[in-house]
Image (spheres, rainbow, N blue to C red):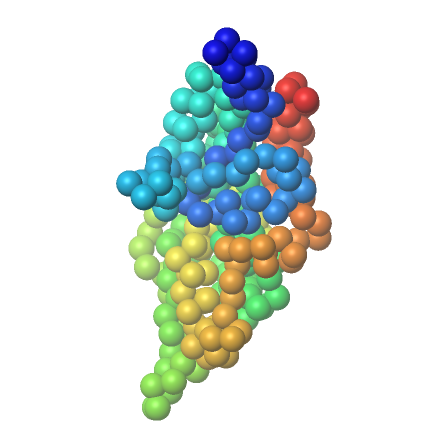
Length: 236
């Protein structure tokens, strides 16, 4: 029994876990730095022993803290969102969320990127203060023809201040702006206009293949990437 317990302790020390938001583990488990990690969603197990979908950054932080208390080598990767400070062993991506990574790296988002560039050119100071939505435009036969981007509601003052501090050009707008629902809606537009066989599947290994390399270098900021590697070296 003592030997069995010792084996468990050694095994626990050797295994490394990464917890991520929602179902984004489909993307992260293909990155080279995480090849020897067990990648999980952060949600607690359901009755059928499956991972709960839609876990948030707070779920990731809580899960990592709980696992660390048990002596588990647990790490967390979360969306940047509006956050500026992060706990130990928690690493933010250098994008608002994974949808922003897809927007900037997948060719099929070309029409959306171009539309955003035209929209905010010379008006970035205005559009970074609003939540945007994408509306499908149909022709007389009710077929999807194009789309338009509209302002929905003005953001709260604290979020405005954050975006004013990090968004100052088209590139940073697409990287840090909350465009998640707009990007998801564009995927619906693309599927309806160009056919189901051409739908954009960004929450899969397809996105990994679109990065310059399958590496966290293109997901984290330089400082976060260095911090992650330094923390990993402590246990290897």
